[in-house]
Image 1 (cartoon, rainbow, N blue to C red):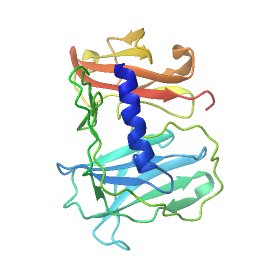
Image 2: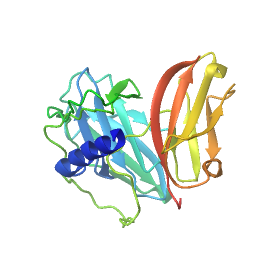
Image 3: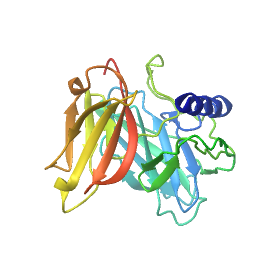
Image 4: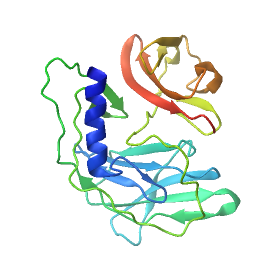
Amino acid sequence: MKKALFYSLFSLVICNTHSVAQDTLPDFSLRNVGGNRIIAGWTNPFNNIKQISIQRSKDSLTGYKTIMTVPDPTPVQNGYADTRAPHDSMFYRIYIMLEKGQFYFSKPRRPVKDTIAVVTDNPKVEADTIRIGDTFVIAKPFRVDIDKFPGTDTVAVPKVDKNKKVPNGFLPSLYVYTNRDGYVRVNLPVSDKINQFSIKFYEENGNFLFELKNILEREFKIDKSAFYHAGWFFFELYDGGKLLEKHKFYLEKEF
């Protein structure tokens, strides 16, 4: 019942906002979620992408400076939280580089402010807190604030595969996520005690799969074969026994 309620609420938000959470590159979404946090999100349709950089400027045409180059540009869905913007009216654009030196810029845009809330008053539904970077989101019941959402700005780009199956309305974890080479990538927070981190993995139905303990490397990959099949998987990231993040990722049938 809880799961049905969550997905019915989730579907309601998606149907009423079209692609609120993320847009397909070179388009991207840009939201002001408050607390000096601007969140950019995008869906990547390119198989030959080499670099994605987020740029910011006070002017829509000039003065752009790169504030972040994504460590791994290949995940189908990704995002970035800017917590150091001078104010919430800055302009943002995305630089995209493909193989053979091809590159493109998205059209600039300003963040839109979240104001519409979708909530449930059912006291029996438990609330799970998901941490995305320094942002916490309540999933059951959950709240999504939206006033306006980005349009469909475009630039000339090579033909992309529009039939590629992409999970919608999802902002991936910054610590555990998938990439196109068939691996689950782990990028742990900076710490002097990496071996204190542990990760538990679960099936979508909640069945426990396996746990990684005594981790020695901050960045590493897990082969897709460890999960046996495609689909959604949940994980819990712990730091010294304390829950740091509870989130999920999606493995595709073909990479």
